[in-house]
Image (cartoon, rainbow, N blue to C red; front, side):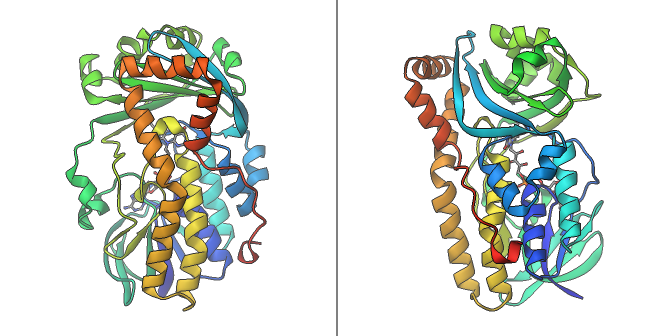
Length: 386
Ligand SMILES: Cc1cc2nc3c(=O)[nH]c(=O)nc-3n(C[C@H](O)[C@H](O)[C@H](O)COP(=O)(O)OP(=O)(O)OC[C@H]3O[C@@H](n4cnc5c(N)ncnc54)[C@H](O)[C@@H]3O)c2cc1C
């Protein structure tokens, strides 16, 4: 059989696109290499725009019932512990990827997509004009359209010869869940602590747990013994505000989730004819806490365009041009600003200056918060999404 769309990766971008294309009546294969539920490295802070996407998908109630925690305050500290606090312009949510990805994958299957877990896609060949053949867990699968929703970095990027792989990226990331008396102080609050060699986010998630997640320079990891626990203790806890928080928390996850080579450089929207969505199309700096909302938003952008293409209402070139144009106008500014703030967070003096400036000039903080993310608009469900 020839599928209308093969979606590679069952994270947020992949599941949301699968839901939307299946509801429009397309034959969709959603291939995910892991199985659910599974822990995944992420700050687990869902910026307000994500709620618009959830509402549009009809899953907002399910997300809330799963235990998502409301978040309406942000506290940011410099490496010396100086802090600044601001209200978020709209309510955000905290929910683990353990729960969220499982929920979305289930909704994709309920919508009619064929979801396969434990299924890795190893190669894709073809063009948008002639269709594709992909190797899916050793089986050749034909599809008219292939969507790359496989996240920030995959072996497929090498197969597709994507230029961003030639650039070195020195960042590593870790996360674990914590619990304890300090969790109460983080009720409805996300904290972001800058420290020499990295920054660390603390965000409340379901079951009174705190997700502790940080991104660091690989040199800082090596200098602190090469382990995530070592980096947390030796490097990040030199920030007294973060140290105080962690003294009241105990790790409850069996192990740290880890990633290396976090790629924040620009990427292409198409590679070898494959249409990239979510992090595969471009990853925003983690401190913006907007990558998941963006992954969901790319799904909202691409789904109607892809559907038009599959139904012959949009040519290959019109599909490419429309997606590229919408992607750039929607995300271009926040990607640029995110890279700039990320770079500042890694420099002790710049981080201190930024936190002091936000303290003295709250409108600057509000401007930064607003412009490193989208807006929580609530679009009515499109006809094909009902
Ligand atoms: C340190 C750090 C902290 C972050 N904190 C936040 C935060 O607080 N808030 C926020 O919004 N964002 C955060 N992000 C970003 C966020 O995690 C991503 O933007 C988001 O997960 C992107 O979703 P996605 O669907 O594009 O990809 P992913 O969620 O990465 O999903 C990709 C899926 O594809 C699968 N896959 C990969 N290759 C294949 C293959 N060949 N075949 C089949 N399946 C495959 C993977 O198993 C995975 O399930 C953070 C990122 C980092 C590194």
